[in-house]
Image (cartoon, rainbow over all chains, first blue to last red; front, side):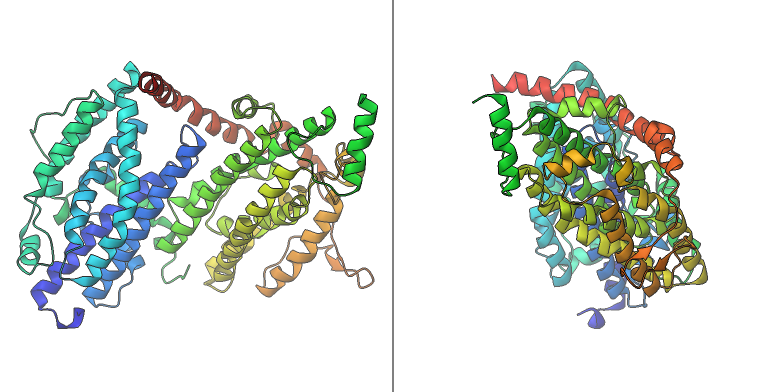
Amino acid sequence: MTNILDKNIQNALFNYILGLGDDRLILGHRLSEWCGHAHILEEDIALGNIGLDLIGQASAYLSLAAEVENKNRTEDDLAYFRNEYEFKNFQLVEQPNIDFAYTIVRQFFFDVYEGIFLEELAKSKFEQMAGIAKKSIKENIYHTRHSRNWILRLGDGTEESHVKTQTAINDLWKFTGEIFSENENDNILINENFAPDLKPLKSKWNEIIKSVLNEATLEMPENIGFSSGSRSGIHTEHLGHLLAEMQIVARSFPGAKW
Amino acid sequence: MNEEQKLADFEARIERGEIIEPKDWMPERYRRQLIRMMSQHAHSEYVGMLPEGNWITRAPSLRRKMVLLAKVQDEAGHGLYIYSATETLGIDRKELLDQLLNGTAKYSSIFNYPSLSWADMGTIGWFVDGAAIVNQTMLAKSSYGPYARAMIRICKEENFHKKQGYEIITTLANGTAEQKKMAQDAVNRWWWPSLMMFGPTDKESPNSAELMKWKVKIKSNDELRQRFVDLTVPQAKAVNLTLPDPDLKLNEETGHWEFGHINWQEFYNVIKGNGPMNKERLKARNEAFEKGKWVREAALAYAKKHNN
């Protein structure tokens, strides 16, 4: 299918799939930073598992992106040899772990988005992409159960956990605006039924978040001052450090195979 | 039945090769020795996550990143599994964890060495998991049922880890000059500490005789160490890497590879807490525990509120 695409669509598709891969790669990487340092062994396993699922999905998306681009690049070339401004992940997922509350809030915001989004992406006319989405739906159900349960425990646990979680929500809120925004690139694909229209999905996300935060005795912040631009390569300062670490070995030995 | 008869019955069961289960009568020494050995094993899995965890974020390809993350996660699973098996002896995980955190419990000396390059991820899998397999294959026939069953399951995964480690090393050894140098450097650093993993020589091993009498262990430290050396020497040759022991030579008569003198002073130094990474490893475990305190408290508080 990829070799009969119109140049414009091919390019839009490449950028779009890259964004999907980058979200999962960067978030998976952040979760992998926890491995060995969680508060209890069970959680080392859980965070590792979720990270592993996400990096697996990232690998599938990036490999598909490379195929669509058709320039002899591999998923590893895309992961390890692009610079900050070429990464298209949401700013939300690059935010540092800080503590377990930030990690869980970041994850919960993403998981709920992912649940809504995957259902639509699975209907894409671009079958290879829809295929990856379909495979991820089951994983997302587990991820969402995990992060949702922790939001409830932390929000409605002790006063300390409540304050920490509310702080994380307030701090990360500004990064949630752009996860349902659309750009020209997306519009090309929406017109072709390759990508879902995100606009109607935002309210669904808001509803779920609101009801879970409510159950957890937490408050939903007001919608002011959202950040944006990640899909065109605008990031926070955190991404550069993450990439420096992630890419160091691959870049230190040009031409090496691993 | 008096204690003496019970002991005689127990030893007769062991002699017949029967498996001891948690509810069976067992001598207090047997229970204590098992708790000591199994908890050390569980702690080793837990602490062992750190040297490899150190490279997850820098793994040079997506596939390697996933495999390494999965491996470290397996170790967490092994830790959990062996802690649970240890609990069948009437001690709880919290108490075992306290012993680890306050420094009174031991864990494998190997994890007190630093992981300094990507090649260490290959060497650890190849040597450390390789040594663990030699040890655990023996323990899978241990007289204590829960331990033996845990080992059977864990060995399957360790075999996979060893294969992956050796594959990393093979790739590096066949790679660029720099990669090969990296692989040789890692082999040089990990070889001797890996031999020390099997513990003191039979003459110096304080617990061995008792453990073997009760068939908790079937083979001695020196037998296992020799088996590991015999298995590993040809593997090193196959990838053209040199094991850092000029005295290594095949004894044609016995068919065993003879090796040079192990620096036991270094071994005892590490065991006593003075290895290159002892303090850091313990500090990392304590930090994770301390930082997680509020999370555990929140989970408990939530459970209390919502289970009523």
